[in-house]
Amino acid sequence: MSDQGDPLARIADALERLAPPPPSPIDWAAAPAYVWDGTARAVAELVAPPLDLLKGIDAQKQVVTANINRLAAGHAAHDMLLWGSRGMGKSALLRAGIHAAQKANPTAIALVQVAPEALASLAALFARLRGQQRRFLVFIDDLGFEDGDSSGPRALRSWLEGGVEARPANVRLAVTSNRRAIVPRHLSEQDDPINPRDAVDDRLALADRFGLSIGFHNCSQDDYLAIIAGYCDAHGLTWEPGEALEWSKRRGARSGRVAWQFVTELAGRAGKQL
Image 1 (cartoon, rainbow, N blue to C red):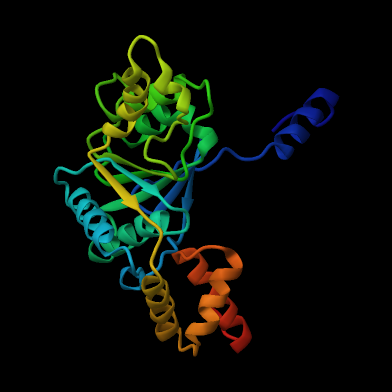
Image 2: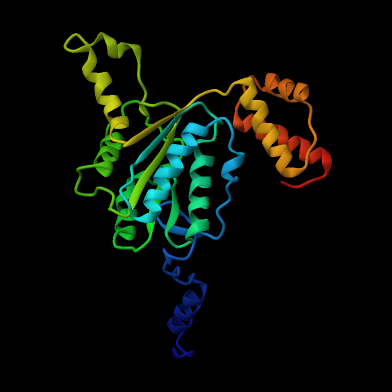
């Protein structure tokens, strides 16, 4: 113990009491999911809809879940780019696929969501995950790069394949984006006097690094109503198709997200939780 008669010792003791304790080391085998924002944080519960409630994306669901199951089993698996219409269940499908795989073997695989601002530290995350017995799906939601950002796309290419800091064998990347090319494209790219295709091909080359590129498109009216019917049946809610269609018209879109918002409204009216 420090000499309490020494003013400097008393100050040092006070500062030690004020300083937060060092963070506990992360157990990469314990939690179903993690968040990486430059440091790791465990998530106690992975919230995801049941796979059978994700309607209108049957083909996409089959491809994504099969790939996740291969990764969980330690077999060869692809990096995935899920691109397309907003609100059509891209991120929900990834969470649901991991959740379903964990039911079979909770310790086989985990989801690690990376904050967009933490992309520069992705190599540090890979260093943490390398050598772990568990497999990981590293998830980057709604990825996009600003005009003029050349370092971000180059780093992502390197992480996907070929670079010295490429993701380890027990890790695969899953990225969602509203556009397949991920990076912005402009009509002026077609006016390149040297080779009109070079600029376009360079931007699309990033998407080509993913083994699976899976498109999500606006849902039909029938699919939209089927999504609502599935949720309402699961939660014991009554509904009217006409009101559901009016709800989508007021929002200017039909999607899984709009359908879920309508179901939330119905549950609130009925005094139920979802």
